[in-house]
Length: 385
Ligand SMILES: Cc1cc2nc3c(=O)[nH]c(=O)nc-3n(C[C@H](O)[C@H](O)[C@H](O)COP(=O)(O)O)c2cc1C
Image 1 (cartoon, helix red, strand yellow):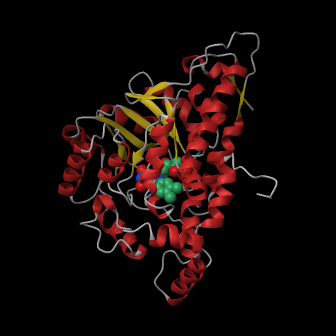
Image 2 (spheres, helix red, strand yellow; image 1 turned 180 degrees about the vertical axis):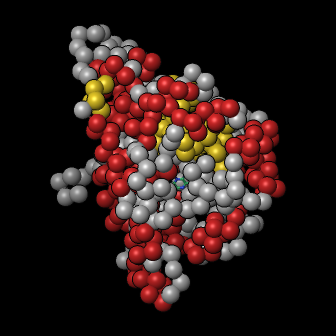
Image 3 (cartoon, helix red, strand yellow; image 1 turned 90 degrees about the vertical axis):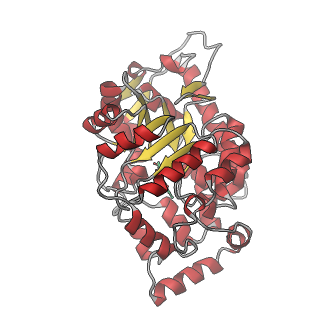
């Protein structure tokens, strides 16, 4: 931003701020996607395939952006997505995100792989949050995690199904984030030397950098290579829909399956007892060249929308995108990178401001489309270009 652009407003503004503050390898881990990053780009660009219809003279005096998201009374159809190691992007980042979400009246999702534990996050707001789970080989660890989540007041579980193993994120190899050779180590040291504000705020004052929910089982979480080794060894690649049935039997709250891209899988999730699905390709971080989430949403919403709640994430960058997703059948959206860019660039206030902008954008678009409620947003109000 130039000196005349003093206030960050868009996701892109916050992205630029984040880029300046973070060590390169951390920024790339956040910003990047799998392989050639084709899906990462398509997730964002494909929202442009849909245009909004402008309708006039319709009395838009009672605009209401509020809705229910898995039973949560939300001020708008947006939730903060689970982001592993959010506490590496800002000091105790998960607590900052949870406070910002609470202030703006939307749900916050704690990742299995967060720096802050579920207890630390719920203590920060005193409010219920959502919890995201990856299937680990050790089912005892899963059971104890779920007991902790329930005791901490978690109402909704998001079970992520699109990461039997981590995707090939090539930036992480190129910039030395993953790698133990001398070049990788020297590169990381040099990148840290260029990030004094991050070193003070997160590197020193943001400790401990353990994976809060798994601090007893991750061997040395301060070491990113150990962290990756843990994921490689503990993530269960043999998981199937039968495991969801098991999960359903031990989890009493809402269960949402995150990472579904095909109608058949959405139907399987419903059959396994899910209360909702998230149409998601993990923000383009897993299977590169898979379709964008927004192009997959309409068919899934049509197929299972009357049997469960349908959510979407990946590529949502504005309130206008939220309006398009709702019109195509989503109950709500999750945003991942946007809230981390805002937090890394401008702290908790940045996340609050970004969410306020989203809500204003939703409200303004609704007024100019001639609707007062989210229920009135239907596919007929969109044009495909
Ligand atoms: C740095 C990073 C870490 C993530 N960690 C998790 C995670 O721990 N669990 C999970 O289910 N999804 C994780 N995701 C995926 C997000 O929950 C979400 O699906 C994705 O970011 C949505 O795309 P967007 O970033 O374009 O909004 C992560 C995404 C990013 C960018």
